[in-house]
Image 1 (cartoon, rainbow, N blue to C red):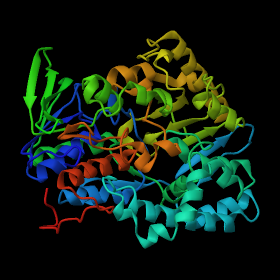
Image 2: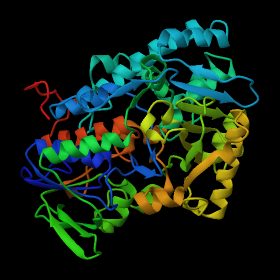
Image 3: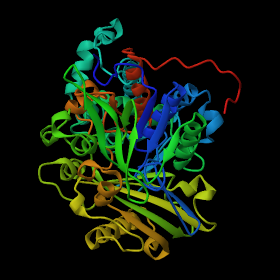
Length: 536
């Protein structure tokens, strides 16, 4: 029997977690004909893709880069609609701005490939032509990855034995074994270019010095395709997908904290999932029976807290050798006046690039100071993100994944050490971007730390994203999306296949459907024909 597959077609399903993955999974399962309930521990859906509103400001509290738009559109088309119908997408130009330590002027990464070729040439003679070859390679690897790896459950490896994979075998092996930093360094000498091309490793919860160079494919996304923004913010995605799920008949129950996955033994010596135990909004114990259980919660939490030891595919010992992605200190800042010094997306890169990553991912971790960090200013594009005459800033500082770094709060009420770090970050942005009065202009302030990710999302080691995309945690080495010991128990989300990021989470939802169908193909599911121009 295929692990994770019930003895008969399930009629009911419970999805643990109402983040983007859980909602997307529920919508697809309901469209497949199942009676689906989502149980979400928090008072609002969204998980990491959350929002916080106060005093006229609307803050996204998690993901803020809209990349791989075709993945979003494909998901919507599986539900009979499209991204165009559901979202208002804005092309960002520049795609993002980068301030480099001790450099007089920032670099604006452009919205098109042609303009970025010109940009790289202006930074390093000959780099324009080399970028063309780099992006051609990125596009080729991206297409192979999307066709053969991203949409695969790896339940069978036979579909991977195709000419397009086998013919590229030696090259793909080299790309897997060589770190991204070395791959970039062989082609470019200007440190600014090296940092721009290495930074996408952070989107994968890793470091360019340990991320396989296979992931240079990421540069196709920002340097060729450009960066989009969904007007209304990223929580708009949650609103849309939750609405689509409910229109398919999904029931979303909030403040329902799952405490155990219920199982029963079968005659074949295996167990079978029969539902979940949870505590409702009043704190009272409850049970929900189901033929299929899908956990879109953190995989470490699912395995080590919701299952007994004898039924764990990934017991505590497994996690001892796993590498978490970074933790994060987040700042949500409402600022009086305009901030033209910052683009919609702005990055600050330190000169001690490798040492910065070593402090986050090395054996002896510490918080980098100064830090390479990221700033999102959605009010540059979306007037509803802040009240008139104000700006909205979301700041992310990658730090070690360690809940002991503390939790945040509003108006300086977080742990003192974390609030002091936030003060340092504000001063850094002020100095690097030339905004000397930034601190005095802040009218709203909220901080979030690794401790919050543990408390709010049951995040393993307080990690911001999930297990890092190093070699032993990528593709089929990342694990399986089906329990090997409990039939009818599947996994979804950033901590399982195919990995980190909103597009990966939507693909992860689709992989649940492929598991349910016993589909071992490597390509995205066929999109159903459109019945009308607007199904929903």
